[in-house]
Image (cartoon, rainbow, N blue to C red):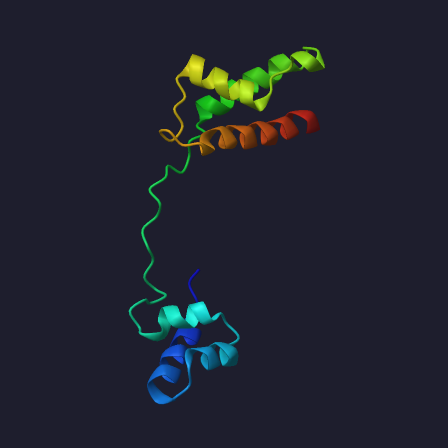
Length: 126
């Protein structure tokens, strides 16, 4: 998380114009010593961000949501024990629709699980 510019400027001021230690500066500013250490030398600046993780933003496309809704709609008439679980919906997505998610990621099933929970809430609330 980036800090505010005024905090960064204060850290740099204390570094250049006083004999305070990093620990004292952290105590004065009320921030973590790790944060002070990070900005102490000035090699890291708060306005430069690291590039993103490269992960796809939307692995749950409209087609995937439509498939999940189709499964949930078929579950309305089915007995409780025969309704789809989120894991079963995920395995059907992989088998029937060729769903790959984000290439070998373990979090894709979690994304499907989260989407199933959200859509179940919408279906039951209406």
